[in-house]
Length: 231
Ligand SMILES: *Cc1c(COP(=O)(O)O)cnc(C)c1O
Image 1 (cartoon, rainbow, N blue to C red):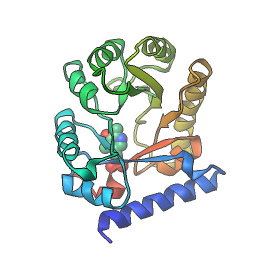
Image 2 (image 1 turned 135 degrees about the horizontal axis):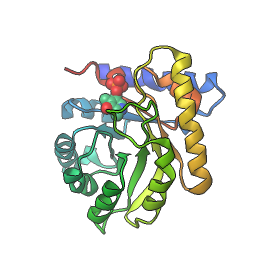
Image 3 (image 1 turned 30 degrees about the horizontal axis):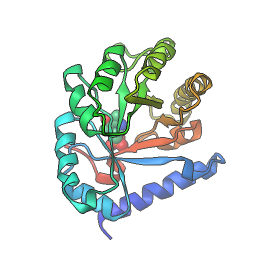
């Protein structure tokens, strides 16, 4: 067994444990393997261990990896999530290549992703990124602007609104992590009341995954625990 396969097995087990601890069905939680800065050989090892969903932060790097796997049979059935900050001038590459975008946080980006999504592909799955810790320099919209952006996305035929994403300010205490994530869960429920198709709450990284699962996350984004530390 490769190290990456062992790591993946451990993370799957941690997801099961965290879910059981709070009475959730672990099958409700998708594991996104965050492969940013890691070589295609690392992704291949994860594929061999059964992983299919991958997250990338940098547009160019992600597009290159997607292209590499598109030409190979092992790439069949992979699902690519863009999870990094997105400049408007790179939105075309994301719309053309990825299956999901987690970082939609302004009206202009919604319009551009919609305009550039190729007609022959399924609509791009999008998540609204919320600035839940209210950090002035951070990406994401304020919670009070969520519903107006959601209404705009719902008008875009080439986008499919799937839910919310957040990257809280780092916090090591479980209860503090949980409190922030619960605010996200409340927003998620409020969004679902208006947009019943919403089914995804993207919360949790290597250092705060159990709290995210306890708060109701349906998709955890894990890099370090699978692929090791980044340079
Ligand atoms: C890098 C990154 C992750 C993964 O973080 P780890 O701590 O390595 O698990 C998850 N989400 C986003 C948005 C990231 O940029």
